[in-house]
Image (tube, rainbow, N blue to C red; front, side):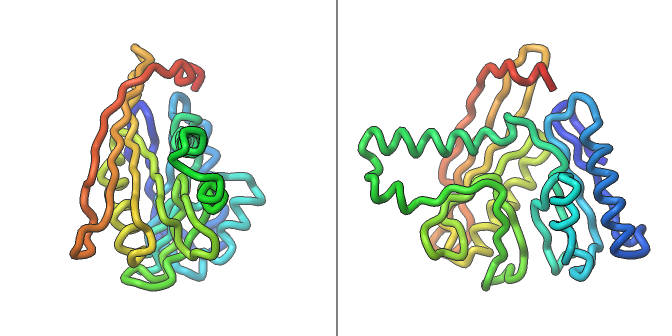
Length: 232
C-alpha cells in the first residue's frame, strides 16, 4: 500500500482470489473501504494477475454498485487500475479544458465550426486498435477528439505527488500506443498542503519526436489557494 496526505494506492493480486466472482466481491468491498478512509482526496486500486476472462463483467459490476470506474487494463501485463474515489481537485482538468475552449472561441482563436468538431469527454474508455499496445484499454481523465476518430487527439491525466512517474508512463503509452493518432498528452501532478490550504500543480506537455518517441515539450509549475480541500 502506498499512501500520502493526498492519496491512497492499494495493491492486490488476482493470485489471492479463487475465481471471478470472488474477484468482483473483493473489488467492490475494497473500493468502499478506500472511500471510507478519511482525509484522502484520491484513491486507486491496482490489481495484478487479473485474467482477461475476469474483466468481461467488471464494468457492469462497477456501474451496478456505483463503485468507481476502470482506469486501465493491460491484457499483456494483466494489471488492472480502478479509481475508487476522486475529489473535485483531481478532476479540475475537466473544468480547465472546458473553460479554455470557451476562451478560445470568444477570443477568435477557435472558430465556431472548429469548436463544433471538438468532442470533449471524461473517463471514456478507449481500446488501442493497433500499434505496440493493441488491445490495451485506458480511460483518460479528459479526452479531446474529432468526429469518426477511434482514438482521442489530446488526452489529460491527473495524479498526486507520488504518481508523477506513473503519469509519465501514461503519457508515453497514449502517444506510442496511439500509433500517431494521439498527438499530445498533458499530465497534471498535484501536491496539497492542508496547513496552508495551498495546492501546487506541475503540468507537463508531451508529444512525439521525429523518431516516434515521447518528448517533454513544456513544463509549468503553478501554486493556488483551494479552500475546497478543507472539506475532505
